[in-house]
Length: 77
Image (cartoon, rainbow, N blue to C red; front, side):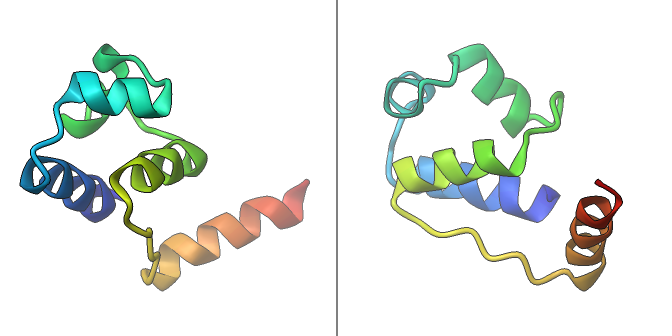
C-alpha cells in the first residue's frame, strides 16, 4: 500500500496538481489527502482508486501477500 501512495503522490507532484485541485476533483478533503500522503491515515482501496482516476493513472496491485489478504477477508464475509 505504501508504494501505491508514494507513487500517487509523486504523480501528483509531477503533474503539478495541488492538493486543493485534487480535492476538488475527488471530493476528498485536503486534510484527508494530506493525511494519506503522509501515512497518517489508511485509505480504502476505493479512495486510492478515486485519486488515481483524478490523476489519470491506474493502480496495479502486484504484491501477492496484499492480494491474498484482500481475498481472505472477502471469503470470511
